[in-house]
Image (cartoon, rainbow, N blue to C red; front, side, top):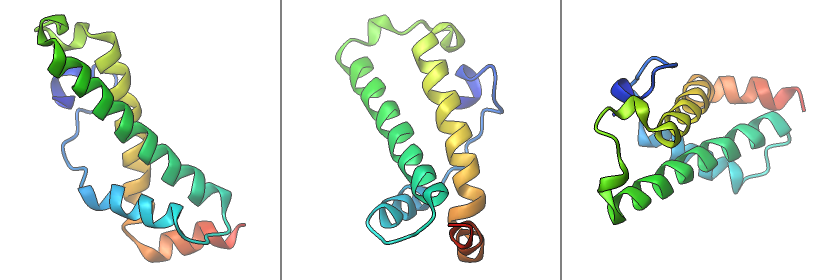
Length: 105
């Protein structure tokens, strides 16, 4: 869906659920870095925004324009999701990268 609706980003499909799992672990942990905590919160927020929008669409699919790029809410949610998860993928799936961010706390 991201590849079709997201006219600004890359339309990626390589975002693993492990990113959300790692973000949740970080939010429950004691990382000193505000950067690590903020990125984890953004991952959760972008995922929840996507979930809420999909729920809204599931109630009334008629509101979705078949030309997905014409659904401004969908495009915005997917763009934020892509930006956030892309950055988190670079840091959260590699413990040494998280340690680098945490070091700057």
